[in-house]
Length: 506
Image 1 (tube, rainbow, N blue to C red):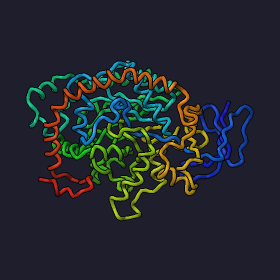
Image 2: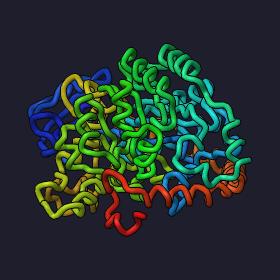
Image 3: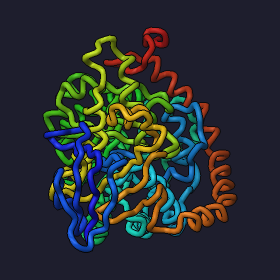
Image 4: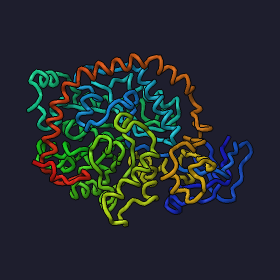
């Protein structure tokens, strides 16, 4: 049985009409769009959806997120990345959770994402101190059941944490430095073998909806053997290689201190940039960095809300686009941005960069912001031939918005209202791979109330464990703060803060 959407306002996000709404009917069969036309008629047995008061768009692609932070939502405030990591990535103590809790966490994240119109997530899953096979499988199991599309990682940090930051050992007590360095870290061989097994056994589950991706945490957090090996493995399996790069000024300083060059220049030198690579954040980039990224065909996931909450800086949106870099949009994790709602990110992207220059022509345009949230994210996820636009032969991953809500009242320019007025409350139906997964605004594939009840039963224990980890790691903050201040006071090649950097340089 197919699905027929009759006479809806449609944003195809294709090369012809882009984000301009046009009235079309859509027919879906066997998980894909089989027809889009103004004069289309349903076939016998089709389920018919009235589109007369509906806006249909491709589902959003969340090009960078961390479902593992779902249980840390709303927990931290006013902590720059490196200090936030001391707590959210517990450096002292084992925060490992059992696979059943991973399954619950992932299910909650998938539900919230789908109900917010996100049909694809690039989920950089980290477990501390390391991910095991049962934990990874639990994520695939949860996403398979809920019905979302996802790239799912094995995330690796292959260096002791104190050796991934500049200056920090100057401030940490020696016994703590020794303790952190005594913790075992995975080798390149172990990680690449784990990832090959994941590609062979998990990649392509859910009729191709669920894909494995490699995820070296960052060039300063992984050895060259991990970076180069992961890049090669991603290309072998036509999959994504997902890496955090130049998220903060501290990382800009790290490149100079650790490698005598920018982190992007280092990656380019060792062969760790490729068309399969996505760099998360990419804030503190030089013009040469941007040129290298564009030449390599590497994508960037722009995460403005997380970048603002962690005080990381403002990414050079227009310069990246002018350089020819493919941009996707991401929420980042639920502890550094506290929500997987991509509509928040879309609106922030459209607004934030207007205050970086008085040049009106350089401000983000509605169409290019929506393209980054759909087509650009699909390209970064190596899914450009599957999702991101509505066209014959593409996967039927789409969202129906109710136009009878206040967000679209009065009806003016629907693309503008989607970006600036809508917050997700108008979402009526979400379809992934031709399957209705959200109806009347609520997920249909799992018992949402039962999932929340399960969390409620476990929440006291979860919070008690997090409180204990925070208590154990909080003494690190004084030393990390001293490191942060020294990095901020160090002259860098660029400034991505909104203020005059001369005010805090030594």
